[in-house]
Image (cartoon, rainbow, N blue to C red; front, side, top):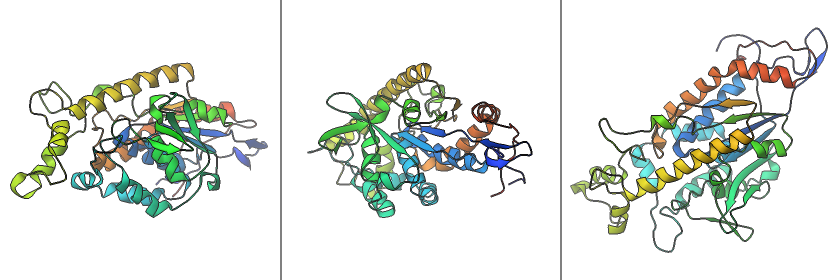
Length: 341
């Protein structure tokens, strides 16, 4: 890492030769995007290198997960874990359960992994204000979870309809927050942010993953069922995968699978909602990682996502510099070189 000072050097109350300056209260809005959410790790790493720390963190779906883990001081653990994910490990976490369930995947194994590392940490114990955005399944209202166990709040926020069962919070059934507010800029402002940095994972929709020459993208980025069968002796699906499950994931013709139609449709809806919400309440700095080539369940591509998250921050450094200059008071002298790790 090159030598130098932070991007907001001199605005944290320090003396720059012409008097002290006051740093703006920064809000970080982390958007939803399923596997593309690992890019948030790269964004957080890059912002820290340039001396930018959020005072408020709000997230939807995977954004709530990464943001919560970050505030709990476990980002290193999360990064280490996601970098070791393989496609077969991913399949192992997809505990398919169609009976007595509101989703294809129970999510119990993933929840157990989160509790293993986070325990019963409560949102009230985090070092700064945090909100996990969810959607009330009955009323359709946007709900910001700002108290209670962190794992429960994150689980509710990434309850993708049809994929994960709804989460019960205080007697209300909650589903994915990205359905109503995919990039929660408004939540950051409501919690007191003077300057909002938004990370939008849906801004590169034209790069959707598809096989060369194929007319229909593979929503997952790869064929989940075929992968399982190819890795199983005799090329047979494990006993836990029944006929109905095979119908959901199988692509027996040139068109998309049922799973692909469902997940891609949700992605289209959230993309349109994102555009509408950001047009009505634009962030002060808009970070858009180029992730359209990453499949929605390609969680094994963490290296690519994290790298692109860092690159996306580098691309908006001039905007970050200008926003800090506008929202800070006092002398406005900064450099654009990262701090030494």
